[in-house]
Amino acid sequence: MLILSIPYLNNAFLEDHVKRTGLEWIEYRLDYNSEYKKLPEKYINSKTIITVRDVSEGGVKQIPRKEKTEFYRKVINKFDCLVDYELSQYHNVDIPAQNLILSYHDFSEIPDIQKLEKVVEISNSKAAKYLKIVVNISNYIDLNFIEKIIRKSNKPVIFAALGKLGKIGRILHKHLGADSTFIGLTQYTTADGQLTEEEAAILKLKDISDKTALGGIVGGEQVWQSLGLEFYNTTFKKRKLNAIYLPFFTDDLSDFMNWFNSTDFKNRFFGFSVTMPFKKEITKLFDPQDLINHPINLFLPRSKKIFNSDIEAFLKCMHYLNIKPENKILIFGAGATTESALIALSGYNIFITSRNEHKGMELAVKYSREFISISEIDNLEFVVLINCTPLGTNNEDVLVKLRIKLPEKIIDLPYKEKNTILIKQCIENEIDFVDGKTFWKWQADSQLKKFLNELNYLGGKK
Image 1 (cartoon, rainbow, N blue to C red):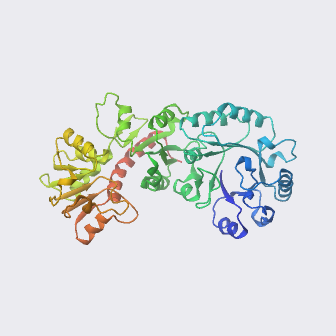
Image 2 (tube, rainbow, N blue to C red):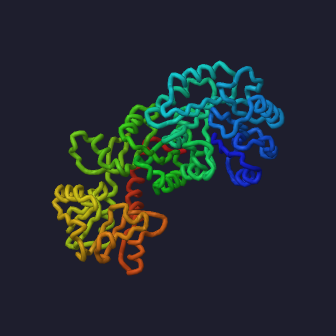
């Protein structure tokens, strides 16, 4: 089950958010308000969790233990709801087992696995409805240890991961063997690393079970803004596929791959998109001798295949814009996407410029192209400009940066909610263009076909 955690700030705040939620299970964090006993009874029922968190366990205001326990008994007797009690403080407290959540919090950066095992052992000796485990997850490999711990519990576990990988830990709670997790209000989360209602909706989190096929996008923090989260998850739901596309943020690709290769549910993964900064690094994991020697942005674990759908999208751009091989084309950039463009457009008249001249010149040499320094590009004319950099995302003017005139055709890869300045200039001057969202959609359609093939093999129907 998904539990929406709402801080009790005041009655008006509570009413506004309770009436808008579509979730049955709600936790009220009463330690946010010293007048917590004024919680309106109309909001309490058998699917309510009442939590008065101790300050030592992450609470906001310290409430006396005796006072808290008396309040817990009162609401249980009247509404048959659940209450949350810290395992470390639960000694000879008379609370009905069917209404009790025993909770354990560890805020250290790395979970103490031996201590967790002891916690589960203690919990197994006590009568309660649930065991709640709250720990920081900073490394993917820690999820393997957490899974083993959870499966040792003799009662259902509510798993609430915190920290850098807290959100992905919560998303995967079912695959890790847990029964439940918490999500928070978009602007008022009650824990570090807590998923929000909005994120849970995009990821179709209510539909995830331990049988759900897993995939997603691997990359830096920008994965949480990926268009793929909405695109693939909506597509899977329309097709009634039991599959989810997730944002696998990491700053350590080896950690992610070690976890993926060793997890007990590896056979549930259907595929991964790959984005910055790992398009080249991940190639080396599949090709240690560097025979491929170019970026990839997709790998399929079951069939052990790798692809670069950006190459297909660039070729589609050439056809859509009717760009001729002899047209003078300037590619701006020096990263993996620039290299994908150079591979795709091997038969075209290409020039390269970049802010990082060293990397730009390396690509020019590798693909036998002419490199032009930005300082020397003034007033040169090109038929086509391909912007492979993030420049434009924050309203930068690419033409001002390059000091060139508006070309006849534009491919501008940054995407944002509103058009970039470069795309606005194309519209104003009736210039043919492909914007970042269109380019992304073309390469995503290619990836989708491959994902569906894998899901068909995995038996992804609901």
